[in-house]
Image 1 (tube, rainbow, N blue to C red):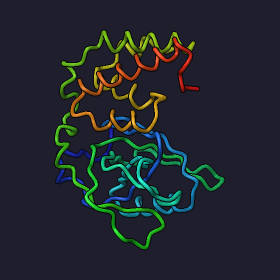
Image 2: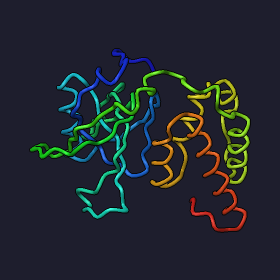
Image 3: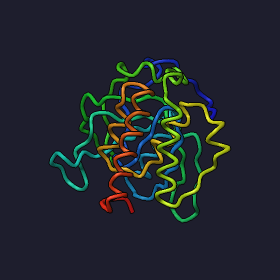
Image 4: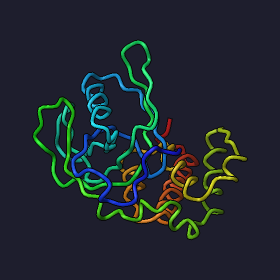
Length: 223
């Protein structure tokens, strides 16, 4: 989705961003994530983000393997910052927004703040390639990816827009499938932290094939 602001590299982004911990939520560069905002602390975050002018929010997953609390879970170290590219009020107190992914970030430290939402100091230095659209997509094994997708759809009696899939560039296809995948937080985090698009596609295929094997043996954990 086109945005009114372009980001050419890490220096175009602020060092401190608000973060939205959400399990199972995977945002990737140039991907779109719709969000239904209703908790007061996150309504305040959206208000403040819009006032700030930068319209940026860091999506990050809670890390359940480390101790934390329900209100303040431990966070993974890597997330993805997105820009609010769509915004609407529901009329019943909710905000309906869409984030467009820009780049991944690594948390350097969490700040002590008075805001009801959390804020982190982050660095984007490790993810300079995220600013280059479609980088590395020629290395993706598209045939293998579509084969795994076909198996998953058949196993779960699902249909897909094959015209859209066939016409999608490799980057858009891999990232959209990763974001929509029904896998758990560890798998989503592995997809997020993949060093390049080829590796992300390979992880997606591997996880899908493992899930299909579980389905065949009656052990699948997907609903």
